[in-house]
Length: 249
Image 1: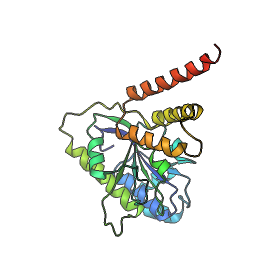
Image 2: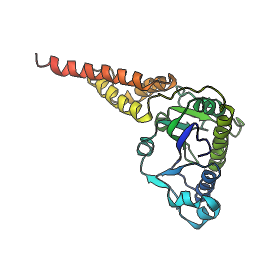
Image 3: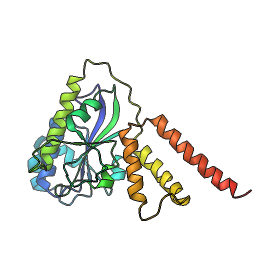
């Protein structure tokens, strides 16, 4: 794609879009900015309708070839880095957002990222707190506090433009090697951590999601590397091994 030095396989992911016009407009934007793939999670509209095709124009190929998923987890788990857009103001107080400019400048500071995904939420309610925690980083696009919510296709256009602009800005800089833990690695790790903490009684079933969410948010903000998340998983596995074997003695 146009950002070739930094990325390969850029994916735009729409979660439960309910307007075919918006979907068509996003398909057109995918063509404008040479996105590699459009993915849609549980669409609430006919994404192959005449309205969608009229809006897509040269981006119709993205509608024809788009992949449809039934949940967000499956849509992102082959991606090395996942970014999520959030325009909501009623999010958890533990949530942490950065400006779109800061996130994309950070993203393009790496030599290369394979399979970068950018997630956009529902037109009426955005992404849930649990869905936001599936992303490595969450960004917002600064708007008026009186009317913070952007139209879906407008948000996509601004994000893709910011990404392209950041790529050009960092083109001559010395870039870092990308080694962050993927969304899937973090997700799988926290399934094991939650299971262990429930077993030892540190977590209670009815409050575990909230507490685990706070811990996961901390791990995401720390830009945890693949090595670091593997160390954490190794600790969990060793504790589980000890608990299982100590019962036999």
